[in-house]
Each structure stands twice: as C-alpha cells, then as structure tokens.
Image (tube, rainbow, N blue to C red):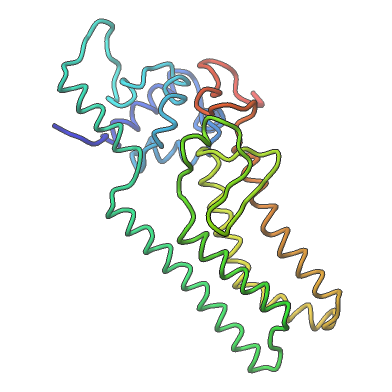
Length: 272
C-alpha cells in the first residue's frame, strides 16, 4: 500500500473544494495566515502543507482531515478498514518532518550558501585593503557578530519549534548563547519559518553589504562618531525590523493554539 500522500491528488482536491466555496487562492491563504504562493504549490502538487495546518485547512474547506489526506469525499457511513486507517496514520506522520537524508541535504545546502556569503565578504574586505580603505575596529565587531549570528541562522537554528510554542503565546526563544525576544509577537510554527528566512536574509545582506556600505559612509561622513552611529542603527534595525514585520504578519491574533484560532468555514476573510 501507498504510505505517502499523493501530492497531485491532494492538490487537486484542495483546488476543487476551494473553488466550490468560491474562494481565490489569496482568500484561502489569508484565512490560514499564509501566502497565496503556498496554496498554489499545494494545488500544483509541488508541495504539501505542514501537519499543523491540516486541521485549519480541513475546517476552512468544510471537509474532514481524513478526506483531505485521502484527496476525496468520503460518503457518510462508509467505514475504513483497520489497514486503511494504519496507512492513513503513516501518511499523516510523513508530513510531520524530513527524512534523515532530506535533513542532511538541507543542512548541506544551507552550509554552502552561508560559506558563499562569507567568502564574498572576505573578497570584499581584501579588495578594501588593496585600495587603502580597510574596515575599522567597530566594523570588525559588526562583521564578527554577523558571521557568528549568520552561522547559527543558516546551520544551527531550529526549523520547527517545540509543540508548546503552538499552545501558548511565547515571545522568547533561546538556543544556547543565542536569544531572541520580540514583545508583542508570539513565536509558533506558523510564523517561525518566515522569521528564520528573514534572519538568514538579514545576515547575508549584512556580511556582504557592510564592508562596502562602511567604506561609502567613511568617504561621505569621515571616520568619526557619526559613521559608527549610522552603522549601529543599520545593524540593529536590519535585525529587528524584518523579524518584527514577518513575525507580526504571520502571527495569530488572540492567543492560544494557532490551529484552534483559524477562521471557521464560510467566514469572510480579512478585508473581504
């Protein structure tokens, strides 16, 4: 028996039920606090939703989770054999995480991406030494912090949060020496992937852009306090603002489990 979800059948079923309700991909995405690109990938059979999205997706479409996983409507009274239930459970579990091979491949890709960013930064610094504009002491501190934080964001950060983050509104994340606190925003597995992506983009832009930006500011403002203050503002705002914006955008208002706070079927989407 098949032990994995049929992506094409799943996507076709989602598209069929969405159209039956008269929803656009964007409207369905808004109800799930996602982007319409995610819905498009599901319906084209390119990807599957996270297991945490199964209940809100089923509720929004007005189907059961079983029907969602089966990719078809199940008539009332039509029972399932024990073997079918077992296979359905296995398919559900297959959505809950990566295989070890996929995990290793993803980590390798991330490490290579970050290594390329660091190599680009080193090349820029060498070029600045060559033209007589080497980084100053404060800039070395910013670069060091960026490389350290970026290495964690690209290779060490959790891709998923523990389940208790989805049950309570927690605004603090700790991972060894790295701390992340964002009052007013709850971290959970609906906005965490977007926060991780924002951290990776920010650290990449930092290590690749800081040497050049610092050299330009030095030519315009000189090597005084003004330049260092501007660099400090850029460093902190580049870290805080992207995380705050995406965390706020994909946050679930009202507290509690994001699965349980999804809109009920038929309820108008935001801005409708």
